[in-house]
Length: 207
Image (cartoon, rainbow, N blue to C red; front, side):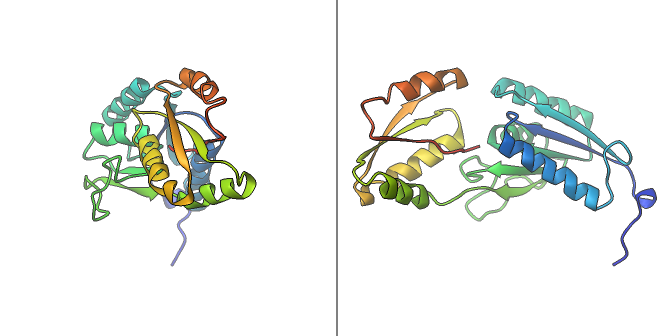
């Protein structure tokens, strides 16, 4: 294998979208760019990057996806479920790479056989087993019986995690008290509503 020099590498364009700027998502983006640099692709030299954040707004995620589809970059990286769903709905020809997806099956990015639902799509799931957080809760709060959980009804990953919790909790003698937060601004109020009703509040990142 002979490593290519930067002069021999054809310039490429890459569009990156993520639902919100968050340390964990930002690190994923940074890791992608670092790996591209290791392969000889450097932003500003032979790599043109168009990064757009939806700032937590699903409608904005859809607008970004449509813009990217019209721009025709060489490929699109979608970080988080809402961003991936929006991009996949906007193009069936531009290569799409998704990441930070807790439940690609629930998000309809793959089918039951782990095959992408579109030929131009591939990616990586960040789904983790639900049992370790429940085991930890019982270690640090052995008397806890009711777990409060705030979720987003309109977000596939959030609903998927809730269903996993409700399935796994009874075997441990636990119950899940879920409270819906339809918008980011509703999270604080939903969390406060659990005061006095739940023994412990579980917060999981599901994107």
